[in-house]
Amino acid sequence: MQAYINFLKKLEQGQVAPVYLFYGEEDYLRRQAVSELTRRLLPEEAAQFNYDLLDGEEASLEQVISLAQAPPFLSSRRLVVVRHAPYFSGRGKKAPDAGADVLPEEEAKEKAAPEEKAFLAYLQNPAPTACLVLETGHPVDQRKKIFKAVQKAGQAIEFAHLRNADLNRWLLKQVARAGKKMAPAAADLIINRVGQSMTLLNNELQKLIAYTGESGIITREDVLQTTPRLVEENIFAVVDALGERRAKRALAGIRDLLAAGEPPPVILAMVARQFRLLLQVKELAAAGAQAAEISKQLGIPPFVARKIIAQSANFSFGQIEQTLEQLLEFDVAIKSGKQEFYPAVEKLVLSLLAG
Image (cartoon, rainbow, N blue to C red; front, side):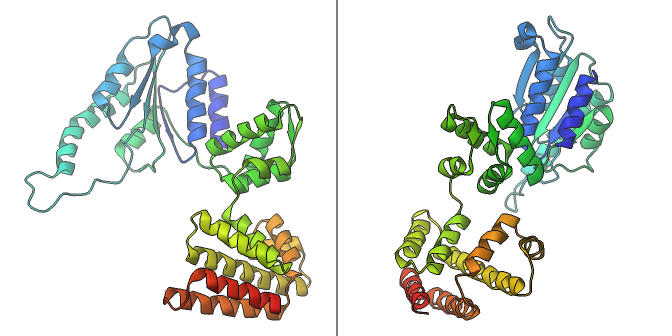
């Protein structure tokens, strides 16, 4: 987020570079940066005459240079945006079968070489009436001449995924702008369910704002109702049901996972992981560790640590160790074809209820 904030500060100070490279995983911030340039550089009545959007996979560098050098109309600047700019990647194309007369990669290099030289020449003296934006979500090779030339002529800005704490603050600000409130725990839940993509988070947030209607508060329950359930949550529910001795609910959770397309080996591995965490948490708690310390030692979020601590009270050390042994036996039996997945799970559930 700091890279984006610094970019905005420079724009507010009137510092507009003649060329930008926006790269990195966070496409939401890349698009927001382009939107800010458009809003600040182009008067509304002149935008249609001075804004060009190109696909870098299709447009040639010659076209890019030509548009950047074209004079603006009814505006002091032109804005040329090249999405999917392929010029900065260090990855080459696959070579064809042996025996081909000319390799496509070599042919492409021969064709690209004069264009790249012309573009490097442009970057040494970019048009003062143009702002050229090159955008890519792919990794860039910072050793390439073209990357260094863009850095020297303008700015290369990386928009990486934000940390969860920054995403939480961003979500709360977005909610406040919509005239609502949301607890930080609810924001954490959205992030855990949706992931770090700000585009996906924004989409889910807009759904939440619409879902809550005139209510001024977005609750954890609202998030649970509107966002897709994680596989991990289903696993938690299955283990909860096992601990509460509810066989039907536990088996229903397994069937839900299968219906969602989760492969049986993955389900078995996740259940085993959950029981390993139960054992580790139970051992740490027995030694006097609190939730915060358990969270730190096991590298899991605090709310997950609290949840597992609560689950661990439903099982004895012996039950957890026996379950892990059974899961290993079932894994071997299923992979060797001696037993099918669902009957093995039923057997596991019944053995736990009998324990």
